[in-house]
Each structure stands twice: as structure tokens, then as C-alpha cells.
Length: 129
Image (cartoon, rainbow, N blue to C red; front, side, top):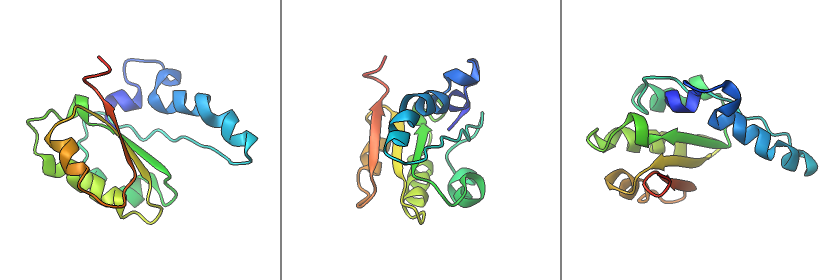
């Protein structure tokens, strides 16, 4: 994600990734599953083309979940094709990660819903404000 995912302006322990790690790690360990959240948030980056086309090189080969905050960095006026490229590349990653995206319901959301076989969850930015 972008600078908000990286935790800019907050303590690292308040970033999405750190809160996720603190919230679910004990539950996964109780099931015998190792859980490790990695924060790859980078300020001032869009979801494409760099991040979308270099997912293995940036995130590695073992991805279970990917999250992107489309609401803050990529306003609705930005071309939707960048978001679609990101989601498509994530969807064809060998581990088939579940996609979480934070955004408003709009054109980007509708385009991402067209993909078959990709697990995705929308966190509606409008409803959370």
C-alpha cells in the first residue's frame, strides 16, 4: 500500500500490518499455523505499473493476503486500469492471495468485481468515515 499502509504519521505499532499481526497471531498459533505480517507500504507509489508488474520481486513468492488502500492515494479521477492491472497480477500470482482493498464503491470496485476466481474484500471508505 501507500504511506498510510506504511504507517507514516503514526507509530509503526499503529500501522495496518502491525495491528493485524497483534490481532490474529495468537489465534493462528493456537491452530499450529505460523502467521507473519509484512509491511511493504511505500509512500507516493501507485498500484501500477511498478508494483503490479514486479509483485514477486517486491513481495516475494509466499503471499496469502494483499491489501491496497485505493481511497487515499488514487482518487477516482485516476485511470481505473492501474487498479485493474494490480488486481489482475495479484490474481494470477502462484499463491492466489486474497485481496483486500480500501476504497469507495465506484467504477474501480465494479471493475474488480468482474474477475472470476479471485477472493476479494472491499472495505468501504465511505461507510467508515
